[in-house]
Image (cartoon, rainbow, N blue to C red; front, side, top):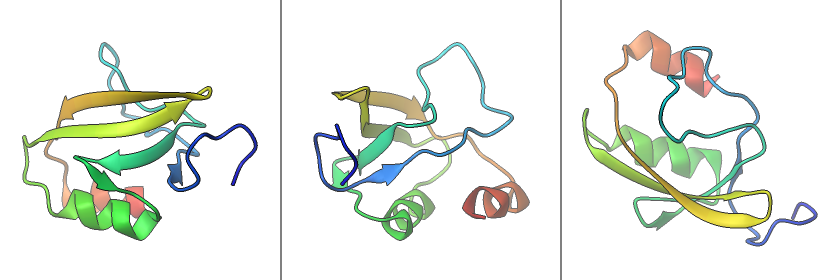
Length: 90
């Protein structure tokens, strides 16, 4: 567990996609993702699996921890090209 993190499981955001759009709440480096649509996230594989099951334009709610505070970010899943998704998993 990282120092100062309130929940002992999750996936740490280490970088942000270059094409991330502004104007809405988004993940930032250092955020810890704890759940995806209410499903606990305890590994990168579980996060990938959960995202793979979503259809384009699905509503998404993620529970994150940022600067020691728990918060929720909601958004609609954008459609991305399969090649772009492969780059996100690298």
